Amino acid sequence: MTLQQITADDIAGWDSLQDIAASFEKRGLKPRDNLGDDNELVLQLDDDEFVVLVEAGPGETATEFKPDNQTQHTNLVATNDFENFTFLTRTLFSISRNINVASG
Image (cartoon, rainbow, N blue to C red):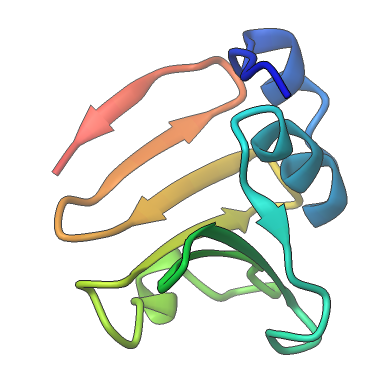
């Protein structure tokens, strides 16, 4: 499978964890349906490295979903009804639908 770029159009269409997972599959990540909680979708990057997609509930912030093990986990948290997306790793950064990126 040839890896493809995730585009702005992909991100603009993110309205569910499945939409996000489909974009990441273009980069070679594999869904692991048997892992994760009800509000999570787990994608496998490597043998022991995973990305967890999380849908935050009303009033929940992205920082409430810090990875359990930062050496092996990255969480992508969708907040505000899939209007904002935050990657939680050793370095925190966020994107929103207007594709602004902020480092923290």
